[in-house]
Structures are given as structure tokens and as C-alpha cells.
Length: 78
Image (tube, rainbow, N blue to C red):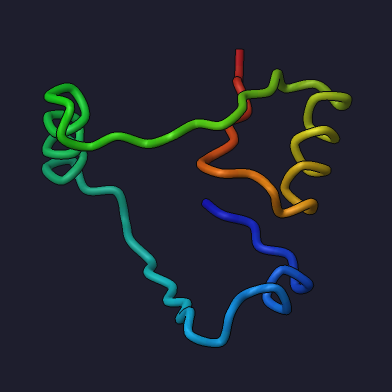
């Protein structure tokens, strides 16, 4: 899931095209993704992770709004 703030679109060059894809989790595809990840063929860069607290979630939102994050940010759920 991604959250994009409306003002973020103003900063995107006109040559960039956005597409939304809605998918349902499918067990066979999730197994294939697991194989790719475990085999090192698929990698995701996590730039920061945050605890599931009000302060940490606020910091994650602040960084997201700033637009300077490279990669994904993750909220750790206990």
C-alpha cells in the first residue's frame, strides 16, 4: 500500500506516468515472490523502519510528506 500526498504530484516531472494496479493476494503468486526474494532475485530497499507508536508513526508521516525518502518505509507491528 502506498500513500501519496496530493502536493507530491506537483513535484513530479511531466514525463513520469502513474499507473495504479489493484491485485488480490493469490497464494501461488505469493509463493513465487517468496522464492524470488529468498533467492536474491528480488530486493526491496527499506530506507527506514518505525515502531508502531504515535511518535514513530508521526515521524514516518513527516518523512513521507517531505518527499526525500528513497525506498520503502516500514512500520513494525509487534
